[in-house]
Image (tube, rainbow, N blue to C red; front, side, top):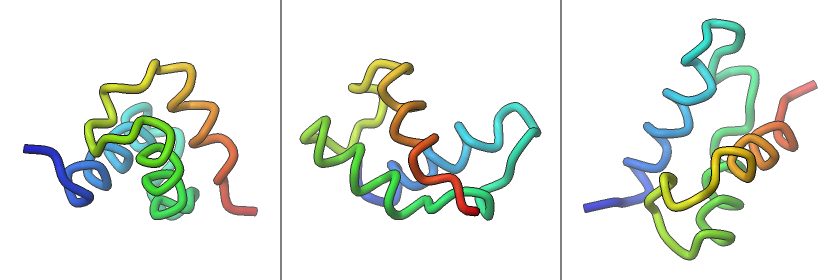
Length: 62
C-alpha cells in the first residue's frame, strides 16, 4: 500500500542515493506533492525516472 509517507521515504532515498545531496538540499514536501499530482498516485515508481528527476531538480533549495 502506497501513502504520502511511502512517497516521502521514496523521495528521500532517491535524492540521497548518490551521496551527492541530502534531504535538506531539496523541498521534499513540494517534490512529493508535485509528483503525486502528476502521477495521480502515491507510488512514485509510476513516474518515469526522467520525469521524477525533472520534478526533483525544480525544488533544489538555494
